[in-house]
Length: 582
Image (cartoon, rainbow, N blue to C red; front, side, top):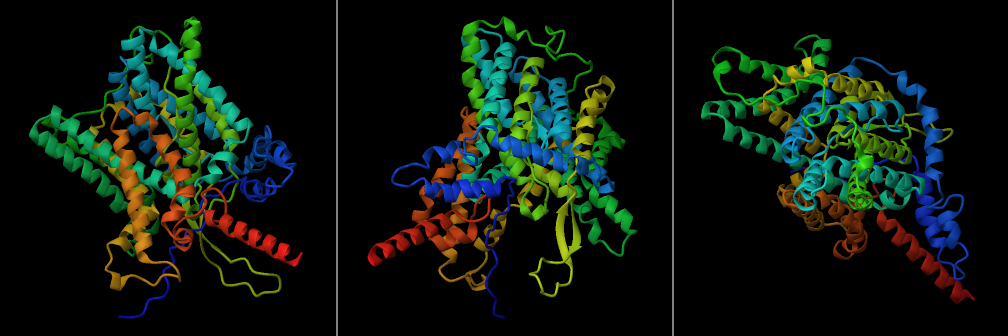
């Protein structure tokens, strides 16, 4: 057996933030300077020119970044951008309609297909035009659906108050809370402490949720149709997923077909598979089976027959309920803030080669605004979606030849392929516009032709694609590899530590997923957030510093959590040497 070199599994910072330099200064240097005996730097640390709580600091920077990138975002338009828009359209609207069917049943017909499609299209259009990070895809999420269902039950069963006015005020409160988070630079003093440990668990959780949704969709089909129709539903679901995966490899089929044919098959793989498997049940004897299809609205009006317009008379809610609505508003704020921030972070990971600055604070302001609009219109609000947001970046990724940077006077190396993403607004705008067009009754009927088995297959596909880029999977492969075949590790690091770290992430993912199946499901983001202090305060006692430096790192900035400990140790040693010298 040939000798293997050291394994390259070191985690570098893969999540870029436009505020990273300031985060590093505020989070590291100023943190140390605040420990002065007289505490004179304490107030400047928070409210000084670069202070963490300096009002509007990040918003001003985001405005500068947005002005600098906005025109260039409309200068990139090609066939891959169109293919990305079509792909994201399918992966956004079909799961949204599934959530709509649950909301229709569990909110007493307050929300249905028309409301979910309207919200997804409207919020998507606003973000495609005005957001700081147009790669982030928006839609109605499963966790919010669960939260809304619980609020409806409390309103109707226990408190006997109208659901939509309470929800409208809850979302209005959510909006101004988002404004406060943006004004006081919440991204700097929250997300700067997030590491890959939590982000990878969150990404894995979303993959598991999509596979689970596929299974539940097939389970519901089994309860409603004959055995023959159910067996076809399983074939249709698996076929939708596998055909899309197969076609996505068309670029490697050379010399088969012309290269433009292979390129088209690759970029439109999901769309081709979905359309193909939607059409199959209408052919031959399959047409006689009792297929389950998506339930859609046939008129452009609210789902609830008691509502005539899309405006909620929220001003008629009793005053005490206006203030009580702050409680669910705060819960929605936590859910939306974390979901949207993580979605924006993951869709700009380093592997996608994104180069333009984002706008975390400005996007939170925009999210608060769209949430208020949705509350007033009586439709469910949209926020950042996983895995659709990173899948959007994945569909726009390409490779270009670039020469590595060199020092002055050095001979430049030969160009090599580098990953880049088409950072533009067209794909987001087109998919949102297409979704918004589907609020019209004729196109709603067209959506009604889709079998739920195709939707289950789409869930499988999104789960697979999200899973395929998760580093936990790579470490699971090492976990299943015989010790004799494992590559060599750097000094001070053992495979036992890496394996136990990986198993811990998997177990925690299972725990959080279990919570999503209970009545405590709306609180699952709080568990993910709780993993942040656990990682920083507890895990360094269970794993060696060398192991953690190899497998983990800051999510939104360069460096590792263990770097601070090393720096502080060096400072303490330096101060001790000075005392001895004195």
